[in-house]
Length: 385
Image (cartoon, rainbow, N blue to C red; front, top):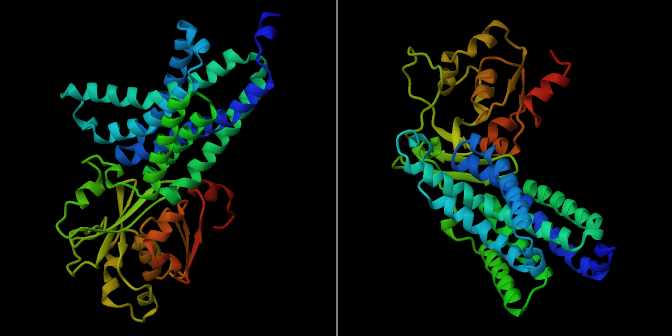
Protein backbone atom coordinates (compact mmCIF):
# COMPACT_ATOMS: atom_id res chain seq x y z
CA UNK A 1 0.00 0.00 0.00
CA UNK A 2 2.81 2.42 0.86
CA UNK A 3 4.48 1.84 -2.48
CA UNK A 4 1.17 2.39 -4.26
CA UNK A 5 0.63 5.72 -2.51
CA UNK A 6 4.21 6.75 -3.36
CA UNK A 7 3.75 5.95 -7.03
CA UNK A 8 3.84 9.20 -9.00
CA UNK A 9 1.89 7.94 -11.99
CA UNK A 10 2.51 7.16 -15.61
CA UNK A 11 3.26 10.66 -16.89
CA UNK A 12 6.40 11.06 -14.80
CA UNK A 13 7.73 7.72 -16.00
CA UNK A 14 6.84 8.30 -19.64
CA UNK A 15 8.71 11.60 -19.60
CA UNK A 16 11.87 9.86 -18.40
CA UNK A 17 11.78 6.83 -20.68
CA UNK A 18 13.47 8.63 -23.63
CA UNK A 19 16.27 9.71 -21.31
CA UNK A 20 16.79 6.17 -20.02
CA UNK A 21 16.61 4.84 -23.58
CA UNK A 22 19.31 7.25 -24.80
CA UNK A 23 21.52 6.72 -21.77
CA UNK A 24 21.34 2.93 -22.15
CA UNK A 25 22.24 3.25 -25.83
CA UNK A 26 25.17 5.52 -24.98
CA UNK A 27 26.47 3.15 -22.31
CA UNK A 28 26.45 0.02 -24.47
CA UNK A 29 27.90 1.97 -27.38
CA UNK A 30 30.73 3.15 -25.15
CA UNK A 31 31.31 -0.34 -23.74
CA UNK A 32 31.48 -2.18 -27.06
CA UNK A 33 33.55 0.55 -28.71
CA UNK A 34 35.94 0.49 -25.78
CA UNK A 35 36.88 -3.09 -26.66
CA UNK A 36 37.98 -1.85 -30.09
CA UNK A 37 39.88 1.13 -28.71
CA UNK A 38 41.81 -0.94 -26.19
CA UNK A 39 42.63 -3.55 -28.83
CA UNK A 40 44.18 -0.82 -30.96
CA UNK A 41 45.87 1.16 -28.19
CA UNK A 42 47.24 -1.81 -26.28
CA UNK A 43 46.66 -5.44 -27.25
CA UNK A 44 43.59 -7.60 -27.63
CA UNK A 45 43.71 -9.08 -24.12
CA UNK A 46 42.93 -5.63 -22.67
CA UNK A 47 39.61 -5.71 -24.53
CA UNK A 48 38.34 -8.48 -22.24
CA UNK A 49 38.83 -6.13 -19.29
CA UNK A 50 35.98 -3.93 -20.49
CA UNK A 51 33.23 -6.31 -19.38
CA UNK A 52 34.73 -6.45 -15.89
CA UNK A 53 34.94 -2.66 -15.75
CA UNK A 54 31.30 -2.33 -16.81
CA UNK A 55 30.19 -4.81 -14.15
CA UNK A 56 32.34 -3.00 -11.59
CA UNK A 57 30.67 0.31 -12.38
CA UNK A 58 27.14 -1.10 -12.36
CA UNK A 59 27.79 -3.08 -9.17
CA UNK A 60 29.30 -0.07 -7.42
CA UNK A 61 26.26 2.03 -8.30
CA UNK A 62 23.93 -0.51 -6.71
CA UNK A 63 26.12 -0.64 -3.61
CA UNK A 64 26.15 3.16 -3.39
CA UNK A 65 22.35 3.31 -3.62
CA UNK A 66 22.05 0.72 -0.88
CA UNK A 67 24.45 2.60 1.39
CA UNK A 68 23.11 6.08 0.60
CA UNK A 69 19.37 5.73 -0.09
CA UNK A 70 18.92 9.51 0.12
CA UNK A 71 20.27 9.69 -3.45
CA UNK A 72 16.96 8.39 -4.69
CA UNK A 73 15.02 11.01 -2.76
CA UNK A 74 17.14 13.89 -4.07
CA UNK A 75 16.51 12.77 -7.67
CA UNK A 76 19.95 13.62 -9.15
CA UNK A 77 19.10 11.98 -12.47
CA UNK A 78 20.14 14.84 -14.80
CA UNK A 79 23.38 15.28 -12.86
CA UNK A 80 24.25 11.58 -13.20
CA UNK A 81 23.42 11.51 -16.91
CA UNK A 82 25.55 14.61 -17.44
CA UNK A 83 28.35 13.01 -15.42
CA UNK A 84 28.08 9.94 -17.66
CA UNK A 85 28.41 12.17 -20.74
CA UNK A 86 31.45 14.03 -19.43
CA UNK A 87 33.16 11.01 -17.90
CA UNK A 88 32.94 8.89 -21.06
CA UNK A 89 34.92 11.42 -23.07
CA UNK A 90 37.10 12.32 -20.09
CA UNK A 91 37.95 8.70 -19.33
CA UNK A 92 38.96 8.11 -22.93
CA UNK A 93 41.21 11.19 -22.95
CA UNK A 94 42.76 10.24 -19.62
CA UNK A 95 43.58 6.67 -20.63
CA UNK A 96 44.82 7.89 -24.01
CA UNK A 97 47.30 10.33 -22.48
CA UNK A 98 48.46 8.47 -19.37
CA UNK A 99 51.82 6.81 -20.19
CA UNK A 100 50.73 3.32 -19.14
CA UNK A 101 53.20 0.64 -20.27
CA UNK A 102 52.04 -2.92 -19.59
CA UNK A 103 55.44 -4.35 -20.54
CA UNK A 104 57.25 -2.62 -17.66
CA UNK A 105 54.69 -3.29 -14.96
CA UNK A 106 56.83 -6.09 -13.44
CA UNK A 107 59.61 -3.71 -12.38
CA UNK A 108 58.08 -0.22 -12.64
CA UNK A 109 55.51 -0.12 -9.86
CA UNK A 110 54.25 3.28 -11.01
CA UNK A 111 52.52 1.40 -13.80
CA UNK A 112 50.26 -0.24 -11.20
CA UNK A 113 49.01 3.20 -10.19
CA UNK A 114 48.46 4.16 -13.83
CA UNK A 115 46.57 0.92 -14.44
CA UNK A 116 44.39 1.61 -11.39
CA UNK A 117 43.65 5.14 -12.60
CA UNK A 118 42.81 3.83 -16.06
CA UNK A 119 40.38 1.27 -14.70
CA UNK A 120 38.69 3.61 -12.24
CA UNK A 121 38.24 6.29 -14.89
CA UNK A 122 36.73 3.84 -17.37
CA UNK A 123 34.34 2.47 -14.72
CA UNK A 124 32.84 5.90 -13.91
CA UNK A 125 30.46 6.12 -16.93
CA UNK A 126 29.03 2.71 -16.07
CA UNK A 127 28.61 3.77 -12.44
CA UNK A 128 26.62 6.85 -13.48
CA UNK A 129 24.47 4.94 -15.96
CA UNK A 130 23.73 2.17 -13.48
CA UNK A 131 22.84 4.72 -10.80
CA UNK A 132 20.28 6.36 -13.10
CA UNK A 133 18.53 3.05 -13.71
CA UNK A 134 18.67 2.13 -10.04
CA UNK A 135 17.20 5.44 -8.89
CA UNK A 136 14.39 5.21 -11.43
CA UNK A 137 13.54 1.72 -10.17
CA UNK A 138 13.54 3.01 -6.59
CA UNK A 139 11.33 5.97 -7.44
CA UNK A 140 8.93 4.13 -9.75
CA UNK A 141 8.85 0.44 -8.73
CA UNK A 142 5.43 -0.13 -10.30
CA UNK A 143 6.82 1.00 -13.66
CA UNK A 144 9.74 -1.44 -13.63
CA UNK A 145 8.46 -3.18 -16.76
CA UNK A 146 8.52 0.00 -18.83
CA UNK A 147 11.85 1.05 -17.34
CA UNK A 148 13.48 -2.27 -18.20
CA UNK A 149 11.94 -2.14 -21.68
CA UNK A 150 13.49 1.28 -22.32
CA UNK A 151 16.78 0.08 -20.87
CA UNK A 152 16.93 -3.06 -23.02
CA UNK A 153 15.75 -1.29 -26.18
CA UNK A 154 18.37 1.41 -25.71
CA UNK A 155 21.05 -1.18 -25.04
CA UNK A 156 20.12 -2.98 -28.25
CA UNK A 157 20.41 0.27 -30.19
CA UNK A 158 23.80 0.92 -28.60
CA UNK A 159 25.09 -2.47 -29.73
CA UNK A 160 23.84 -1.80 -33.26
CA UNK A 161 25.49 1.61 -33.31
CA UNK A 162 28.73 0.03 -32.11
CA UNK A 163 28.78 -2.05 -35.29
CA UNK A 164 27.84 0.77 -37.67
CA UNK A 165 29.32 3.99 -36.31
CA UNK A 166 33.06 3.10 -36.45
CA UNK A 167 32.81 2.86 -40.25
CA UNK A 168 31.49 6.43 -40.38
CA UNK A 169 33.06 8.10 -37.35
CA UNK A 170 36.03 5.94 -36.44
CA UNK A 171 36.65 4.59 -32.96
CA UNK A 172 37.45 8.04 -31.60
CA UNK A 173 34.33 9.59 -33.12
CA UNK A 174 32.21 6.83 -31.65
CA UNK A 175 33.31 7.95 -28.18
CA UNK A 176 31.98 11.41 -29.03
CA UNK A 177 28.71 9.93 -30.25
CA UNK A 178 28.34 8.10 -26.95
CA UNK A 179 28.88 11.32 -25.03
CA UNK A 180 26.40 13.15 -27.25
CA UNK A 181 23.70 10.56 -26.55
CA UNK A 182 24.35 10.83 -22.81
CA UNK A 183 24.03 14.62 -23.03
CA UNK A 184 20.69 14.28 -24.80
CA UNK A 185 19.60 11.82 -22.10
CA UNK A 186 20.34 14.44 -19.44
CA UNK A 187 18.04 16.89 -21.24
CA UNK A 188 15.18 14.37 -21.15
CA UNK A 189 15.69 13.52 -17.48
CA UNK A 190 14.68 16.97 -16.29
CA UNK A 191 16.51 19.16 -13.82
CA UNK A 192 16.79 22.89 -13.29
CA UNK A 193 17.92 25.60 -15.68
CA UNK A 194 21.58 25.19 -14.70
CA UNK A 195 21.54 21.43 -15.24
CA UNK A 196 19.76 21.75 -18.58
CA UNK A 197 22.22 24.41 -19.68
CA UNK A 198 25.17 22.21 -18.74
CA UNK A 199 23.64 19.24 -20.57
CA UNK A 200 23.01 21.37 -23.64
CA UNK A 201 26.60 22.64 -23.55
CA UNK A 202 28.00 19.09 -23.28
CA UNK A 203 25.80 17.94 -26.17
CA UNK A 204 26.93 20.86 -28.33
CA UNK A 205 30.56 20.19 -27.41
CA UNK A 206 30.36 16.56 -28.52
CA UNK A 207 28.52 17.54 -31.69
CA UNK A 208 31.25 20.05 -32.54
CA UNK A 209 33.84 17.33 -31.97
CA UNK A 210 32.02 15.05 -34.40
CA UNK A 211 31.82 17.74 -37.07
CA UNK A 212 35.39 18.99 -36.57
CA UNK A 213 37.41 16.13 -35.01
CA UNK A 214 40.37 17.50 -33.03
CA UNK A 215 43.71 15.76 -33.72
CA UNK A 216 44.39 15.06 -30.03
CA UNK A 217 41.58 12.48 -30.05
CA UNK A 218 43.62 10.04 -32.15
CA UNK A 219 44.28 6.76 -30.35
CA UNK A 220 47.79 6.61 -28.91
CA UNK A 221 49.31 3.23 -29.75
CA UNK A 222 51.59 1.21 -27.52
CA UNK A 223 55.21 1.76 -28.61
CA UNK A 224 55.52 -2.01 -28.97
CA UNK A 225 52.92 -2.22 -31.72
CA UNK A 226 54.14 -3.00 -35.22
CA UNK A 227 52.55 0.17 -36.59
CA UNK A 228 54.42 2.25 -34.00
CA UNK A 229 57.70 0.83 -35.29
CA UNK A 230 56.74 1.32 -38.93
CA UNK A 231 55.83 4.97 -38.42
CA UNK A 232 59.36 5.67 -37.19
CA UNK A 233 60.83 4.92 -40.62
CA UNK A 234 61.99 8.21 -42.21
CA UNK A 235 59.84 7.84 -45.34
CA UNK A 236 56.82 6.17 -43.71
CA UNK A 237 53.48 7.35 -45.07
CA UNK A 238 50.04 6.11 -44.07
CA UNK A 239 48.20 5.46 -47.33
CA UNK A 240 45.04 3.92 -45.86
CA UNK A 241 43.30 4.10 -42.50
CA UNK A 242 39.77 2.96 -41.84
CA UNK A 243 37.69 1.59 -38.99
CA UNK A 244 34.79 -0.82 -39.05
CA UNK A 245 33.01 -3.03 -36.54
CA UNK A 246 35.87 -5.56 -36.73
CA UNK A 247 39.01 -3.50 -36.37
CA UNK A 248 41.11 -0.59 -37.53
CA UNK A 249 43.15 -1.26 -40.66
CA UNK A 250 46.20 0.80 -41.65
CA UNK A 251 48.39 0.53 -44.73
CA UNK A 252 51.86 2.07 -44.63
CA UNK A 253 54.27 2.72 -47.49
CA UNK A 254 57.98 2.76 -46.69
CA UNK A 255 61.15 1.58 -48.40
CA UNK A 256 62.09 -0.07 -45.09
CA UNK A 257 59.12 -2.46 -45.15
CA UNK A 258 60.46 -5.76 -46.48
CA UNK A 259 58.56 -8.79 -45.25
CA UNK A 260 58.45 -12.09 -47.12
CA UNK A 261 58.30 -14.68 -44.31
CA UNK A 262 60.18 -17.88 -45.11
CA UNK A 263 61.99 -16.52 -48.17
CA UNK A 264 64.93 -18.76 -49.08
CA UNK A 265 68.43 -17.42 -48.52
CA UNK A 266 69.24 -18.51 -52.08
CA UNK A 267 67.03 -15.74 -53.48
CA UNK A 268 69.41 -12.89 -54.26
CA UNK A 269 67.34 -10.60 -56.49
CA UNK A 270 65.71 -7.37 -55.31
CA UNK A 271 62.47 -7.72 -53.36
CA UNK A 272 59.25 -6.41 -54.90
CA UNK A 273 57.96 -3.05 -53.63
CA UNK A 274 55.64 -3.53 -50.67
CA UNK A 275 53.34 -1.76 -48.29
CA UNK A 276 52.64 -2.93 -44.76
CA UNK A 277 49.09 -3.82 -43.72
CA UNK A 278 48.36 -3.56 -40.00
CA UNK A 279 45.22 -4.73 -38.21
CA UNK A 280 44.59 -2.95 -34.91
CA UNK A 281 48.06 -1.45 -35.18
CA UNK A 282 49.82 -4.81 -35.29
CA UNK A 283 49.92 -8.14 -37.13
CA UNK A 284 51.95 -7.00 -40.14
CA UNK A 285 51.18 -8.51 -43.53
CA UNK A 286 52.43 -7.23 -46.87
CA UNK A 287 50.60 -5.72 -49.82
CA UNK A 288 52.70 -6.14 -52.96
CA UNK A 289 52.81 -3.07 -55.17
CA UNK A 290 52.63 -5.14 -58.34
CA UNK A 291 50.10 -5.22 -61.16
CA UNK A 292 47.99 -8.43 -60.94
CA UNK A 293 48.06 -8.52 -64.76
CA UNK A 294 51.65 -9.79 -64.45
CA UNK A 295 50.19 -13.15 -63.40
CA UNK A 296 48.76 -13.67 -66.89
CA UNK A 297 52.06 -13.18 -68.71
CA UNK A 298 53.90 -16.24 -70.02
CA UNK A 299 56.57 -16.84 -69.02
CA UNK A 300 56.14 -15.16 -65.66
CA UNK A 301 58.10 -11.92 -65.38
CA UNK A 302 61.16 -11.83 -63.15
CA UNK A 303 59.29 -9.62 -60.66
CA UNK A 304 57.42 -12.76 -59.56
CA UNK A 305 60.46 -15.05 -59.26
CA UNK A 306 60.42 -14.63 -55.48
CA UNK A 307 57.23 -16.72 -55.27
CA UNK A 308 59.27 -19.83 -56.16
CA UNK A 309 61.48 -19.27 -53.12
CA UNK A 310 58.70 -19.26 -50.51
CA UNK A 311 57.83 -22.45 -48.55
CA UNK A 312 54.19 -22.62 -49.67
CA UNK A 313 55.22 -22.78 -53.33
CA UNK A 314 55.87 -26.51 -53.02
CA UNK A 315 52.15 -27.26 -52.59
CA UNK A 316 51.34 -25.76 -55.98
CA UNK A 317 54.37 -27.38 -57.63
CA UNK A 318 53.15 -30.81 -56.52
CA UNK A 319 49.63 -30.24 -57.85
CA UNK A 320 49.71 -27.80 -60.73
CA UNK A 321 46.45 -26.47 -62.10
CA UNK A 322 44.45 -27.36 -59.01
CA UNK A 323 42.18 -25.30 -56.82
CA UNK A 324 43.55 -23.64 -53.71
CA UNK A 325 42.00 -22.46 -50.47
CA UNK A 326 43.70 -19.65 -48.57
CA UNK A 327 42.27 -18.78 -45.16
CA UNK A 328 42.71 -15.20 -44.00
CA UNK A 329 45.18 -14.10 -46.69
CA UNK A 330 45.31 -10.58 -45.19
CA UNK A 331 47.59 -8.52 -47.45
CA UNK A 332 47.34 -11.13 -50.20
CA UNK A 333 50.89 -12.52 -50.36
CA UNK A 334 49.67 -16.13 -50.39
CA UNK A 335 47.28 -15.29 -53.23
CA UNK A 336 50.22 -14.09 -55.30
CA UNK A 337 52.15 -17.28 -54.53
CA UNK A 338 49.24 -19.56 -55.40
CA UNK A 339 48.46 -17.85 -58.71
CA UNK A 340 52.09 -17.46 -59.75
CA UNK A 341 52.82 -21.11 -59.01
CA UNK A 342 50.02 -22.45 -61.16
CA UNK A 343 46.78 -22.64 -59.15
CA UNK A 344 43.81 -22.52 -61.53
CA UNK A 345 41.52 -20.86 -58.98
CA UNK A 346 42.04 -19.57 -55.46
CA UNK A 347 39.29 -19.25 -52.86
CA UNK A 348 40.22 -16.51 -50.40
CA UNK A 349 38.28 -16.59 -47.13
CA UNK A 350 38.52 -13.30 -45.26
CA UNK A 351 36.02 -12.19 -42.62
CA UNK A 352 36.97 -8.52 -42.54
CA UNK A 353 35.88 -6.60 -45.67
CA UNK A 354 38.13 -3.70 -44.72
CA UNK A 355 41.20 -5.90 -45.20
CA UNK A 356 40.05 -6.84 -48.69
CA UNK A 357 39.54 -3.18 -49.52
CA UNK A 358 42.93 -2.16 -48.15
CA UNK A 359 44.83 -4.99 -49.83
CA UNK A 360 43.75 -3.84 -53.26
CA UNK A 361 43.91 -5.45 -56.67
CA UNK A 362 44.96 -9.04 -56.00
CA UNK A 363 41.55 -9.79 -54.48
CA UNK A 364 39.94 -8.63 -57.72
CA UNK A 365 41.95 -10.98 -59.92
CA UNK A 366 39.62 -13.10 -62.12
CA UNK A 367 41.04 -16.35 -60.70
CA UNK A 368 40.42 -15.29 -57.10
CA UNK A 369 37.05 -16.01 -55.49
CA UNK A 370 36.56 -13.97 -52.33
CA UNK A 371 34.36 -15.35 -49.54
CA UNK A 372 33.51 -12.92 -46.74
CA UNK A 373 33.13 -15.31 -43.84
CA UNK A 374 34.85 -16.52 -40.72
CA UNK A 375 37.43 -19.13 -41.70
CA UNK A 376 36.21 -21.79 -39.25
CA UNK A 377 32.60 -21.33 -40.32
CA UNK A 378 33.54 -21.68 -43.98
CA UNK A 379 35.56 -24.85 -43.43
CA UNK A 380 32.75 -26.32 -41.33
CA UNK A 381 30.02 -25.74 -43.89
CA UNK A 382 31.76 -26.17 -47.25
CA UNK A 383 31.67 -29.45 -49.14
CA UNK A 384 34.44 -28.41 -51.55
CA UNK A 385 37.61 -30.45 -51.50
